[in-house]
Image 1 (cartoon, chains in turn orange, blue):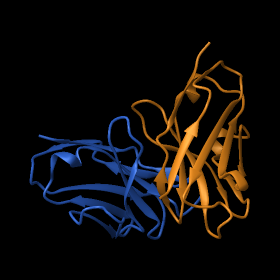
Image 2: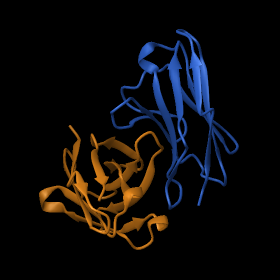
Image 3: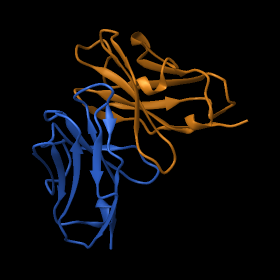
Image 4: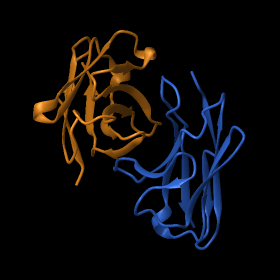
Amino acid sequence: QVTLKESGPGILQPSQTLSLTCTFSGFSLSTYGMGVGWIRQPSGKGLEWLANIWWDDDKYYNPSLKNRLTISKDTSNNQAFLKITNVDTADTATYYCARIDYRFDYWGQGVMVTVSS
Amino acid sequence: DIQMTQSPSSMSASLGDTVTITCLASQDIGNYLSWYQQKPGKSPKLMIYGATNLEDGVPSRFSGSRSGSDYSLTINSLGYDDEGIYHCHQYYEYPLTFGSGTKLEIK
């Protein structure tokens, strides 16, 4: 059974760094072809893809967030991470991680992040 | 970036109706297109992948099709449980993109 769960700080201030963790089970990020992605959704709005990381440590980022994103993984502990630097109110959203098996097939429940001074 | 133009943005239909939601891709995406259903406060659920493939466990009332750059999700015999927001998603090319969503209300 595949499960994913996101965790994060809940609230942070503008200019801080957002650190998110995706803890998963039921698959391994060392398996050929597997990946984990991060997607976010501001309240009442659409989905925005942020970054993917693959079994071979290949990484892809959404260029709209310029160089603010860093994705990484800890294969032995079944975790993936996303850092977003220099946050502002526009980064307020629910953040999801999802397994990639050619497509995003399993999603976590999401974690709400609020950026506020 | 590949733009996914999704329509309609919202719709209302009756029990038992058949509805179709469409996404127009701004460039070729092959069949690298998924459809997700999202209910309030929940994460998206994969319904269709590869444009036409039904995800395991999804009712056969759901189907996906392609005509050129137009990708469609059709839901037959609408039930109350089909209410939600539907999102299309292209995974052909980075940056990955989503449609703007279609809110489906069951009358």
